[in-house]
Image 1: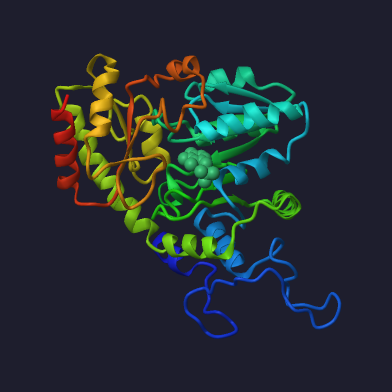
Image 2 (image 1 turned 90 degrees about the horizontal axis):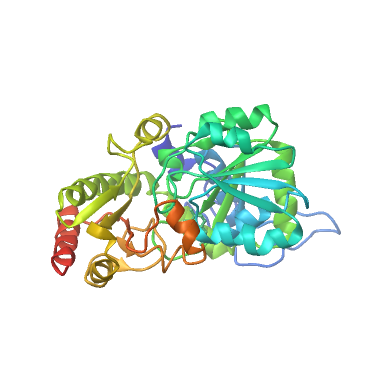
Length: 381
Ligand SMILES: *Cc1c(COP(=O)(O)O)cnc(C)c1O
């Protein structure tokens, strides 16, 4: 099955009890048993739920994996992955990652003896030097948030295999429509389904997808034992969102391309970060491992002027000033004070995340209206 068919059909059958074409929301906490231990595969809704099971099968298919495991949020999904590690283990991560992911490692798991190291993974040699006997997990985000760096998943997985280190890719920014890391050698893929998978900014949800049965068993065990599961209504909304994933992401990419080109020509703008540009330092890797370059664009104003950045951020009307990304509607954000405020300023500046950086999540509106909106906001500077 090709991607555009999988989003609608993979793992999804008419409901066996009624023939309902759309997966029903099984809003129940428990299931009747015929005799003790004799049941239809469902005992208690933390452990199994039919709506969730359908979504888990669908997600596994989209990422070319075998098992999907759903959680109440993207960070709950990451939390479950980190729980597979032991005190003393080390995680090597990209240095330009989602603020909440950084915080989970630093503020929660370091207390329990894990160690996080945040490095520049666009430099492969750098990575190999940093791997030690204690390294058990490599954590990738690509494209990264908000600098839109792209790291070479295949090359990193090759090095990791040599050292017997597992690789997890947070695939939230690309979505499985643009990139399938398991095909490039990754062991684990994770998502904040809140973003492109859900796609309508109406639900918080997370997922993990793997191929390996042993890994899946550990993750299902943690899903049930720790209990950070999503409700059935949330699973239904993600299933519904996924049906148009390919259409939404395709349009978002087209719009983002046009907006990135418009911004780059603008005299008040210093730099535009978009992996589609030929002179983006990681353009070749992006072209190799992604179907298209994504719906996220970041830019910096001339002289890194923070006051002017604030003006732009306060003067768009179609672009809503808000955290999050990946919805049908366009959003504008200020990473330094919003999504990345939990990362210390000196760490932010190291990766080029200045106080004047602006991030766009480009939606699927008419692109001319979006450009006019940015034009008006830039005129306020
Ligand atoms: C939003 C986000 C997360 C966290 O997901 P939640 O659903 O908000 O818990 C993790 N990684 C990336 C790249 C994100 O954008």
